[in-house]
Image (cartoon, rainbow, N blue to C red):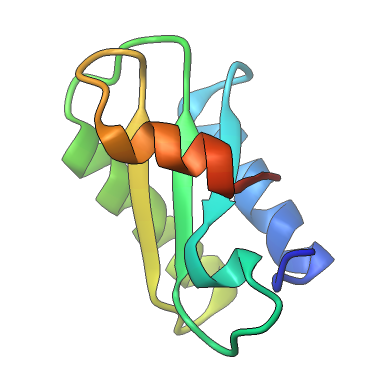
Length: 99
């Protein structure tokens, strides 16, 4: 179970496809995948099969787009393009939920 409405999921996935292309996978992780918790920011991992040149810029641009569409929400975004993998990427795949 995840604590995110179907409307939010639809907006997030659609925005990810628009910005990153058809090969995108969107993962939700953190407090929003724990039904015993309340509130919390929206933590997302964007997984793509192509290289993203400036991941911090792309992540902040994506978060800003979502904030515009969803309203005042704290949204954190990380990107895994297969290059420079970090331990958090494996944790998200184990503990997160694919949208």
